[in-house]
Length: 100
Length: 463
Image 1 (cartoon, chains in turn cyan, purple):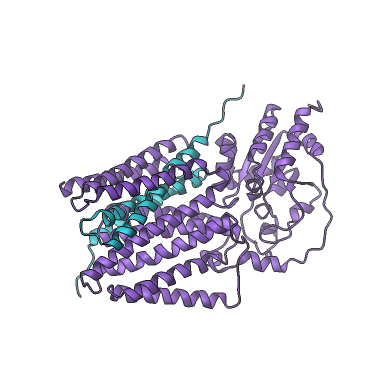
Image 2 (tube, helix red, strand yellow):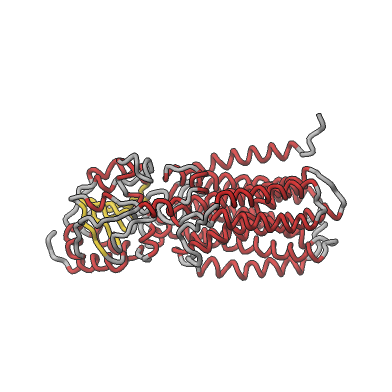
């Protein structure tokens, strides 16, 4: 059998992270499902890392630069607005004041 | 800068993201979760800027500034009722970023003259998810913003057509993985995957949006993870997996709350079919005025309010909060019963009511409040319909049979604020409206609740 062309470490990382994700998300209160979605959205904008590399590489051609620029901008919009709006939502969740 | 430093920054960033989700579990720690997430993101970006192959700092700074200049107003100017639209839009942008990175990477492979490899396969997979999620989310955005009709868009032969486009897109993806240097193939592939995204969401109706948004969230996460495989970047793999798991769990919760399968939501065209089946002869109902409603509420000991999408449409959450304040000031126990699919995205009602300063302990999940409804004096339904339809529980032939409901019909008295007797999204007759103990309160939710509040404060002095 030919060797797998993929690094098995990466698959292990994926499986463990997915498992961890399921365990963590299951514990999130249903109250917070909307902010959860905007938070995970912001976090997933870490794809900006790949976009920055595309955009900033020394030998990047015009196509790579253009697409890299659009991708970096789009991901930045997501991460900035995602974190800010999540916090804006969470700020609104208040505890009951004891009744006088 | 040494590679080890960057790897360490990525590792700490991944830990921050995990902590961020962990702290999201409860409102008391959730804001700490946002800070952890922001810290992780900062580390990831700084780490990347330190990579020695990244040199064009002015362009990167320009893109980051432009993105922030759009993102900041988007976050602060967006009204809370528009949260579902914003979420759909951000899924679209996230998927677009991932898809474009995929295009750049596959071009790099092509330039290097590479043939089939694991990288070309993951890039094809990643781009398929990326482009289809991008256009599908844009469609969802259009429907939620009501730029597009919210009813399912159907045509004859839709399913075979969708299947044909899907097969063609997957075929192109496979061919592209085998021949990454074929530029024409890449263009055809991008077009097909994008068209499939549009066709996927076109037949889906408004009330199924919570499931669709959650599912698109899962796709966007998976695409990011696939990109991590292609770039051998563990941070992207971990983050994508966390995001994907989140979207998937939310989609499962939404499906369960409607007693439906993924396939049924994605290919059902539910609203259309059921709406066509409604004949609708007028049956008598009992209606009541604002003053009647105020009088009944005033004499109750316990009230459960059941909000639905109609409350969001009427922007009635602040008036509802005034009603809540007026009632608790009279010593009445008031709670809110939240159905998982009430609204247009998971948790939609909770955010709106929190915005209106309702303490979160008062927002009770369906399963936790159903047991108490039998001993509740008044169930007040505001802009909800199918989620309180007893037919789901009692009539096995109903289109929504088996869907878990909030059992408003068990309360001693039921009041329903509704614009008119038009059927709800599912187009199904609601028995609740015809019960002897039900009072229909016809009118706009915002002005009706406002009228009730006024009548309450006018003080008929019965208490």
